[in-house]
Image 1: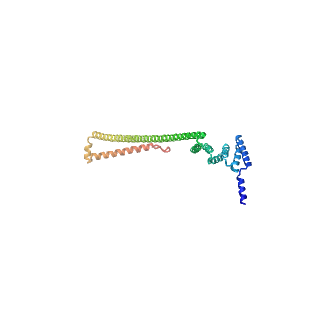
Image 2 (image 1 turned 120 degrees about the horizontal axis):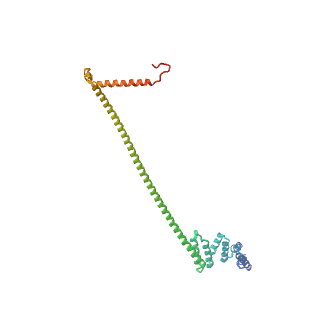
Image 3 (image 1 turned 60 degrees about the vertical axis):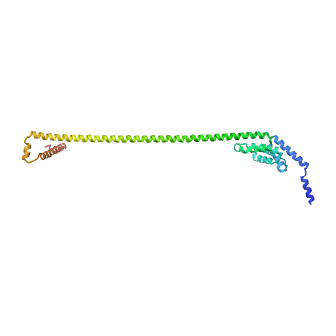
Length: 285
């Protein structure tokens, strides 16, 4: 039994000419399809050789990766290139790393692209395509840094300008507030002056009125004194008669003033009576 198992194993491990012929037909079919732009057919045949038939050939793996890349199937292409990059064939390894670097040549993954291209040059320093891509990506990174620096500087300038504008706005506001306060103080001062002037005018008017009243009283007193003097001059014996009646001049003046007031009241009553309308049905006497 053991002998039979060994023979079967050896027969499997041995190179079958029919398998070689089949593999060559598939390789040719895949290559023709790739050249004709039938990348899906090429990928199917290369995958059949590399995955299903277990053909351990990095060149087939690289062609499979190229087919996926041409189909824009970036996920499978990246996986296939990584498999080739793990092989021992330095040239194919360098090409696989180069393609991974090209696929990563995007603004957000430039550092990753640069690392892939470094690995490509390390695997094969004679890979001029990888060297060119390396310089391009390096220049892109430097340009990106410069743009970021300019952007940072611009942001700083904008922030400084914004701060300056805020400071200026605050200064303008403070200045306006101060002007408003000064105007309010001036207005209050004017109001107080106006109020003081008004009070002064009122006081002057009051003084003028009091002066006029005082003048009127003085005038009335003078008139009364003149009347008394006239009466005394008109009747020289008045003083003597008052002395005989034992009445002082002050008391006599009071009596005279009372008589005058009674006379005035009588005249006013007569005027009020005369102003009332008479009854048409009664005689006017």
